[in-house]
Image (tube, rainbow, N blue to C red; front, side, top):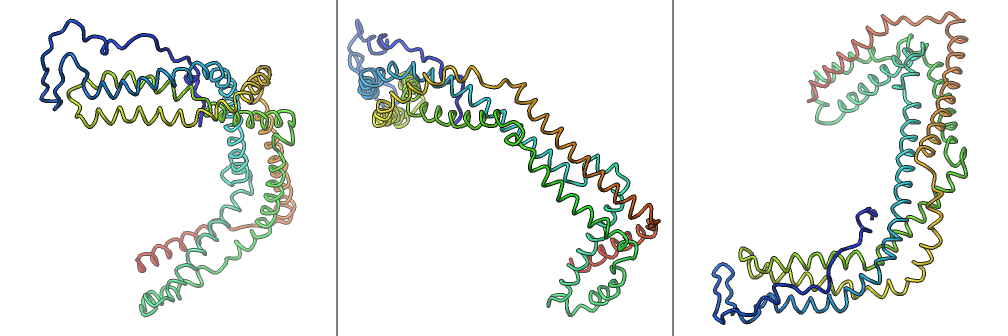
Length: 364
């Protein structure tokens, strides 16, 4: 449940104002009014079945529901204001926390712009491309062994002829040390990023967030216990039904169901009102104890600044990881003169993709 700022506006209803439709029967001739559309006959000096049923519900509303509105109004407004203030802060914390998690995922991926800019990125990209091709070829090789394709000599011959093409090229083998180092560095970066949290870097604000979330949950619970909202909504619905029972375009069944729904809602409120009165003391204490608390909530810019600082720490961790990768690349590849024949490797990868397309068509 969310607390809406509208939910703690006072419901305006003049409970002492008599329904004009119930007092407009004076000085009229006593002859029947026939409505063919409504399938009912009512005498001008008497109330019809809709008015009689609605009067019964109105009596319950005036005698039992209206007092609940008066009893619950002040606590509803006070609790709602506290809950809404807490809810908005907790929501902002949640948004920033999710944004931080997504930011970390981006830093760990190879699509990150900082990673892509590094000279070793192309090496890893080609290694991934080969492993992806090999994975698909192994899949088709497995498929060729099932009964559906086992007897197809064309498929069997193609798979056999492509085996050498998908053997690991020497240039791919040269990339393996770099891939191993990357996986190691990435795991270390992941561990570092896990430590960069609000709890570890700004404990006071983290504790405030936890407390706000707990108090928000309590506020929502107390708002739900308070019969004010449901009672105010019932009065509003009653006014609408009072008009609709005279709408001859609606069937008798529809109008009676509306009145029945009012009765049901009134019964539900009355059946649970004891929960509110049993907890009125606790609700009052909650309001009193948190009037000052909502005044010291962190400002929006403070929350945003805290998470901006966390992102900067993540950037530092990523830079350190990239430095280690560059250092390894320079020592193990540049300094040792390891050369990868990229034109040759790219030609092999292209031929592999062509072979995979051919196998795919044969097995479709």
